[in-house]
Image (cartoon, one colour):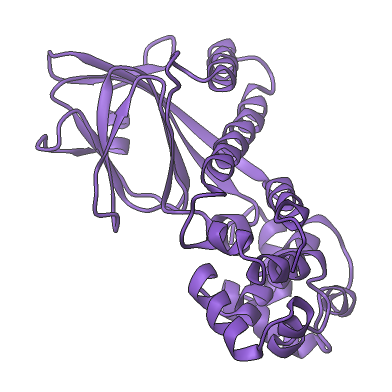
Length: 321
């Protein structure tokens, strides 16, 4: 197989990034003096930007703590409980309790901790419109660490954070909506940096799968035609490998079997249609690859815990899935 890896990898990356849609973002601007430690437990995607100072990040389920320095940007992608603190032995307090007990000043900065060296951060929580089914969130690692360059804060990060702070300070009409769009940009930039820095060195996971001659081509087929009646055998034939070898390799690298991955793509596409339009369920079911509404209903409820109709009603009433 002689196709260039980038012939399918670049469109895959672009398609995933295009699908990112936030419906809300909440920002915090802590100024913490050592000793300090905060714990965060929320279903949202959370980010921390170290403006000055340093800290340690410990993410639940990840064995090794990570040291963060000024100019670093970290995204805890899928709501894993985590700790950020000045020293690995410092006790922690719940971040939201600290916010409630330490009223922000006129610049929306809240202060806590002791009397030692200060660490300033911009932190935020992001809720995605299609979080439970988003194919991107599912394939990302538990956290993304974008390190500062040798020259300090990355230019795109500095300029975007400056815009965020300006909007938060302004209190102008629509400032929250603008700040949410800027959070979109921060997240996309972090994911893009992760892709660019790891695409050619990842030995396992989705990125390694995207580079694999057989799995990568199959991923491109699934993302490009999620409504096609794919089977494991038809995918294996298209990418030129035996059915069993393909199924094993796909599951090993991507972390789930091909048809389960395909189902998530279809449910994600259906959820977008349900949120954004009034198409009948028969139309949506057929367009995303289901032969009947009953099969579509069963798959949808299995993934999101509610029927397509209930999902549409919940989005219109302002509740999230």
